[in-house]
Length: 306
Image (tube, rainbow, N blue to C red):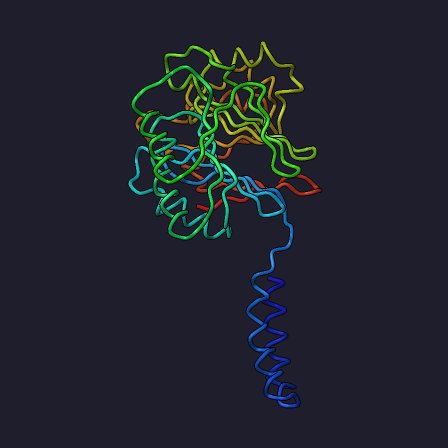
């Protein structure tokens, strides 16, 4: 808004008083005006859960225009990368993705990555790293994902509990899985990330289920799990978000990514009931559209797009 206002005032001034100037200065003034829109002032930390249907994709933007992506996929929509994710990245003015974190390699969390990587190559948007959980599980889906990263020249990093990734004042700590954990199911491999920025904290659960949540509660103290924002595990399935875990996390706001009228019944009534009993406001993309959480000095602001 300030750029449009300043542009309008400057253009009006040029039209009114420009004749008093030499033609050379009028031309330079006119050519300089569009460069107002290249200025990017520091803003707020924002976390946006995109409306990708039955899947998940979360964009984190730092005040200094750094950006990371958490998962990118959907099982009930085609070309979600081209139609939802890339347009969002363009709208937000993302010119570099510092990292893409993949919680696990189910297709509803990864099948839009190729469209994102292709856009990055075509638009010269650098993608720093693809970050995956450090687990012993190896399968065809993982091989395909690694081949995709190699095709686009994107480095791969593996993280486990105790790993910390930093971007300026933003800290992303991995709480799960523990290094080289022997796991047979992809959901159980899910990377759980804790984002810290000043006094703000967010937890991103991937598709971790009850057993993994119990491990988190047992391993970490409540002050390490408590958060302002919770990206609910497994799309709100009743196999996740146990009462013990929610009592430990005590989020101020919870977000659930799922498709409208999905065949899995996400989010489950039991999970929503547990949230209600603890007084946790819940925003579900199937009903609210994309949900953006803006972290401000006065607190957090939640904005939805239906």
